[in-house]
Amino acid sequence: MDININRRIAISSLFFLSGICFSSWASRIPDIKLALNLSEGELGGLLLGMPIGSFVALPLVSWLVDKIGSRRVVILAGILYPCVLPFIGLAPSFWVLAAILIVFGMCGNLLNISMNAQAIGVQKLYGKTILASFHGLWSLAGFTGGAIGALMIGQELPPLIHFIIVSVICYIIVAFAFRYTLKQESRKTQKGLFSQKPEPWLLRIGLISLCGMVCEGCMFDWSGVYFQKVVQAEEALITAGYIAFMSTMALGRFISDFLTDRLGAVKMLQISSALIFIGLLIAVIFPSLVPAIIGFFLVGFGVSSVIPLAYTIAGSRSSNISAGVAISIVSSVGYFGFLFGPPIIGFIAESFNLRVSFTCVALMGALIGLLAIKVKAYSPQRVGVVE
Image (cartoon, rainbow, N blue to C red; front, top):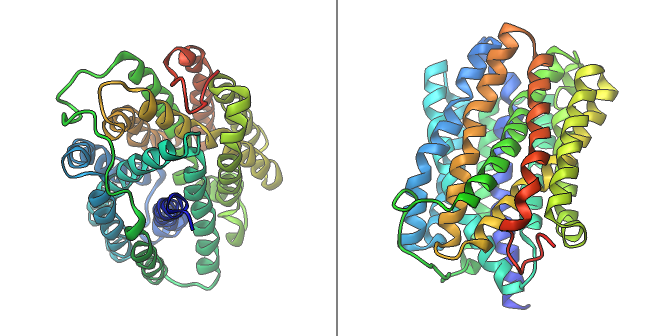
């Protein structure tokens, strides 16, 4: 088998690892909320933990990727991330769980940046846009994790047992993948994330990433609660919205590269923006089971291409910094969406209701289309993201 194919499979498997770890936690949020007797506002505060950890890790992972290379970082992160997962199921209180989620977020972002840097390297070997397909594996893992979560809930297994099973699966993946990770990548600079002034166009791409991550964070952290509180779905169907979102998010990422090469990134981002906006409004205006599932389907398609396009443009366009640092800069801006999005949704829900919160997120989705207008000027001449 061609070595590049092996590399693509290996890096894809690490994206799958990342997705199944995150989705396993996300699928049990309603259960953990009930177990710790948390209000919407308290859950919103708790959800600050993971994005805070992710944001704190950004300068560290940027420095590590440039210093020792993304290969060593991605293997280290692939070991640490699933190791922390079972501790979430052991947390006895709000504050203990918040601390664990901070560590979980740090490990998750170590994996996120390093595996995207590896994926950009593999993409360059292929000479065409393939990054969205890697993110598609992440989303497929999210769908798989949501389905496994529904099965575990149906079998009345506690989160701890669920998370241990997932961790074992992840270590099998790491054992396979490490051999085929890229041992060397081109690094244009040894400067870290904050040792240089970011290029202005990177900040615009970062804002697009921020809006996309707000929408993703809403779906990841609040879809189950929305179906529980607003849709009032039966217990077995509480994860239906999350699964609907993740399934179309995965499918959208597998076809995103094909569509982007034909429509261009501007049109793709604007179509994505419209789908997010319309899908969330459907779920808000018609808060019953079938319309809400349809709405979440549309949101999944809409969100699917936003982050892969942002990372592709950042990792391929930058002329004076490495792909890892460029992605870190975009992530630094984007992670404010994860940092502030989910807890703000909780605070708005406590002051008003979840339908008002989801309407605000719909407006963030619409903003992506407006920000995308000037994306063409910043796009790489190769990699086919915008023509």
